[in-house]
Image 1 (spheres, rainbow, N blue to C red):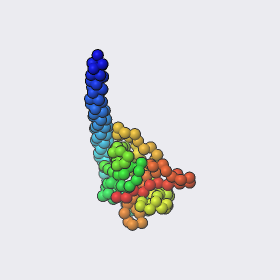
Image 2 (tube, rainbow, N blue to C red):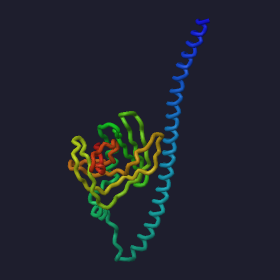
Image 3 (tube, one colour):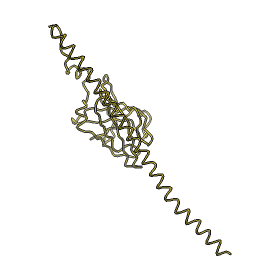
Image 4 (cartoon, one colour):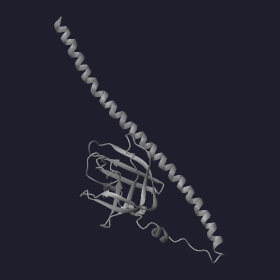
Length: 223
């Protein structure tokens, strides 16, 4: 009788152990499928935005052509100069310059190790944050890019953690969370030209380990 009880108990434990693995695999598969759905949804959203931008650009081009025709009869009409933007935003970084970099990185715990920036237009972009530690999670946002009046921010310098103040005009606005994992909602990002002539990305201090009086200091990411 005891042998039968032991045999039944052993089979129960064995079956429980066998069922646990498939459950874990099913959970991972479900998470992967959920993430895939988010990516597909994001792709559709970006496609729709691109179409809207194209239609808007076509309308603006048509309107501009009509205005140009009317202005050709008026000798007082003045062309718009792109240089005016640079004078208004002396620390701006263009989307063209940003596209040559794409990825910014840092070494640290509890912060994204890589941040990828991809923009089709100023209002049509994606920011992807990936972690090496403590896990391999990926966070994706739709985002927009704009120039703002000059402001000063403080950053922990990459490599030294020395605090310095920099001036910025270029802001990345995180809009909609488009991934299956939780978001980092502490604020927007900034791009600026550093003293070495390269580009830097400033992000909120996602690690949250700032000392008193340093809560505003952002993290510096480099290409």
